[in-house]
Length: 205
Length: 233
Image (spheres, each protein chain N blue to C red):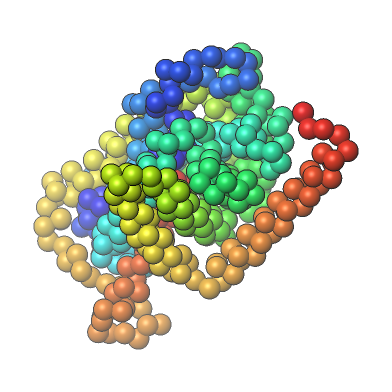
C-alpha cells in the first residue's frame, strides 16, 4: 500500500495507468534514467521469481495429487528423480503446459489471466466451505468449538468478500469461467468412468 | 502459505528419504520467503498501472481491501495447513473435510491451471522488461527460454530453488523500498490528493457518489487480487 501511495505521489494515476512498466516510470521520475534501469533490472528478478514459485508449486501439486489420488492424475507423474530427489516428470509436464499456454495465447494472456482469477476465487470459496464443514465435524468439546466458531466466522467473511470480488470480474468472464469449469468437471467425470471400467477388468496396482 | 513445500511439524518424523518421496530440505525461513516473494512479487511491478486506470488516486483503498481478503484467506489456510502439512494443500483440505475425491480433484485441477497460467502470464511480463534491453527478440521466445531455465532450476533441487528465491525476493524488496524512499525524499507524498478519482465520459458522473466510488474500488481490488495473489498466498 505504501508503494501504491508513493507511486501515485510521484507520477499521478494518469501517467501510471499508461505505462507498460509502471514502477520503472515511477523510478524515472525519482531518479532519471538510472532509476528506470534499476527498476527494469529489478522487474526482471521479480518476474522470474514469481515464475519460479509458480513452476515449483505446480509441480508439487501435480506430484501430491498424483501420489495420493485414485484416478485424477496418473501415478507415473509422481516419479521422483533418483539423484535430484525432485518430481521430474511433474516438472516436465508443468513446463510443457506452460509452453502451450504461452504459444497459443501468442503473448496476450488477458483471457487466461481473467480465467485464472475466476479459478482462484472458486478455489477460495470451496476451501472456505470445507473449513466450515471440517470445523463442524470436529467440534467435540466446548473449548475446541469456541475456536472453531472463530474459524468459521473468518471463513464466512472471506466467502462473502470473495463473492463480491468475483462479481466484479464481469458477466463475460463469469460466463467463460463457468463454461471452463463445466468442461473440467466433464473431463474429470470421463476420467473417473474410464478408470472405473479399466479397474474392473484388471486390479489397480 | 498454501502450497509452499511445507516443512513444518512433520519434519522430524519424516526423514526417510526413500527414492519415492521428496527431499525435505526447506527451512521455515525459506518457506516464509517463498510466500513473501509472491505477495511482493511481480504483481506490484506490473499491475499497479492497470489498477490506477480503474481506481485513480484512491487505489490505496483497493490495496487495503485486497490485503484484508488475503489476510482472511491466509488465516483459514493457516488453520488447515497446520492440520494437513503436505504438498497439494487445497486438494487435501477438501478431500479430508468433505471426504470426496472428485471435488478434491476438481480443486486440484483448478489450482494447477491457475498456477501454470500464472507462470505463463508472468513469463510474458518478464519479456516486457527484457524488451527494454533486447527489443529485437520476440516476447514468446524470451518467455519460453525463461520457463525452460527455471524448470531446470526446479528440477535441479528444491534447496537450490529456495535459495534463489530468497536472493530474488531481497532484490525485489530493495526496489519497492527505493520507490517509497523516493516519494518521501522528493516530498511528493505530502502534496498529493489521495482522493482524486478518474472521471470518464462513459460514466457521465461528475459528482462522485458512494456507489460510484465503490464501483471503482472493488474492481481495482479484484485486479490487485489477480496479480498479487493469483497466485496464491
